[in-house]
Amino acid sequence: MSATSWWNEWNPLLGEEGYPPNVIPSDQPALDPASGGAEIAFFFIAGAAVVLFALPWAIRSARQGHWLPIIVIVGGFICSFEEAMLDMLGHLHWAPNLQMVYTNFGVSVPLLIPLCYVAFLGLMSYFCYFVISNGAKRKHYFMLFAMGGILDAVMETIGINLGVYTYYGIQPFEFLGFPYWWAFINSASFVAVGSILAYGVPRLKGGRKWLLVMAPSYGMAATYFTVGWIHLIAHNSGMPEALRWIAAAMMMVEACFFIALLHYLQGVKDDEPALAWTLPRMFRYVAVPGRSRDELWATMRREGGLDVVPTPAPVREPALV
Image (cartoon, rainbow, N blue to C red):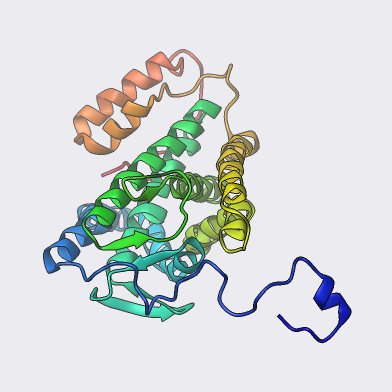
């Protein structure tokens, strides 16, 4: 801290300059090298398998004139350049022997990250868009929020316990190495991106739809710095541990208010007809083959009252995989 004036000497908000007090530089990793098998396995678990499975569907859709799947895939890849900043702010270290793709904020980011972002900020966000654009009640927004959080927690817990990376230092609400505050903010990002897509797709025609290629980057950054700032500031300060836990809890509550706000801006009212989604049905819809999916769609329409109330044609642009 500079001591050139009485103000600087007195100001309780000033501290030591340089790295934030709780950041350990990435060239001093808090974990050992990962095995080659662990790195390869997590490369596919973190997103590569989903992307390889979805890519033929996205290409087929583009040939039919529906470019949104390709747009979100490209957008997810672009969004992956935010990872280094979040690793530094969130106190994450990668195993030092991984195959890396770029360095920023003093952090080298591994090869598995771009496809991970395509899977979550691209394809998971596309599913959020799909549900929202067909009419979603507040409970459905929270189901998407829960779905994204579950998928994120499972994926990350596997990677952490394979020794591919670790969260170091004080990490509130941690279980099996994964701090669950991350699940709240990451999943809120997926729903935010889906909301941006649901707003933009019907309003942007032709080539202008490619403006939505930035939706993943905008949605994630906006969520982190409107919802996550409370915890991220505390996480990188000299605050006592108890206050850092309180800040994390406040951020998790704020993430829930954020989801409610997204519904208020764009969702269907609770007393209006809408597809009868449940959380298990959301998981089932993305996993079952086309005929079973169509049967599930018909069931949700019937149970949601859509078969007896005139409604616009469902937004199925295009059908999922």
